[in-house]
Image (cartoon, rainbow, N blue to C red; front, side):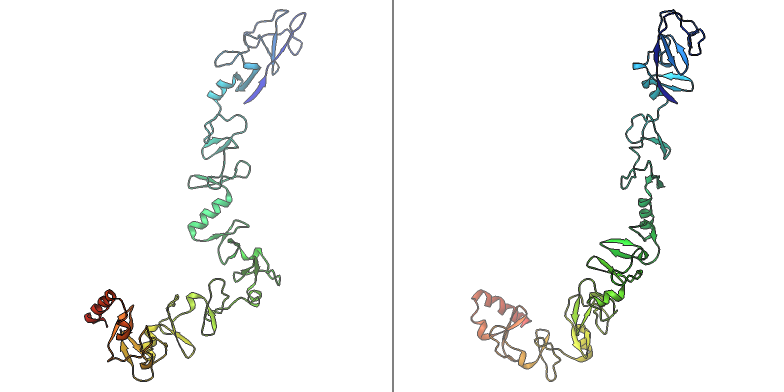
Length: 339
């Protein structure tokens, strides 16, 4: 396939072909009058009336034509007959054609179907019926296998990885910013720099009292140590506290249930084991000197008349100072067995 432009020429004596012989029209095989114009194209000569599109038999607009298998066509007929249509924009492709995915594309229309990067000059990978750049194809394969893709070399990371500013890399692409050693998956990020584990520990990062690893996020301070939240657990059931109350005994932390099972009753006020007699009220245990009115702090006993407000004891004297409507509600609750 080629395109060209017709050239017109004239001779004052007799019309000669390009080789000096008598000119004969390529189409009608007749000669030319002395004053007749000649169309010269590709070494052949034509009458102007004979130099027409092989399909519509009309002159070529501005002398521009397209040639295919020895026949010349105007632009419109050539496109209709032979020019492929771009799979994306639907327009005819004239000039360079990208053949891919069993169809044709303009080079400017052939892009990665995920990141929209141009593919005409860098190649592509077919992935589930999609044309993808190599980077996106690697990410798709990694997501299917549950693995990471290195942000630098775009290869799948089969073993350990490191993170820098949210991106994932092979460790061997970097060296420790402090000592210069090649990094391993143990490397840690601090202030935008990657450090080996040894240098990271020297930088004042808290170390978990359980796993002895650096703590990069939320820190739990308890028992004189620092902990990862998921590693600060009950010494008996090994369940994390996750912000709930814990009880300490001989350097260990316990949840409320196991502390009671192992060491006895805890006072609701002082949170210590009750050494002697236990005052039991409101489904809780109290030291006798800590069981008092929540309003005036007057000491109470199990035999003292009291009322309950917000799950706390209130003496009769303070109760009588409350508004009558509130008294009715509290007394009703007390008579129902909640006091």
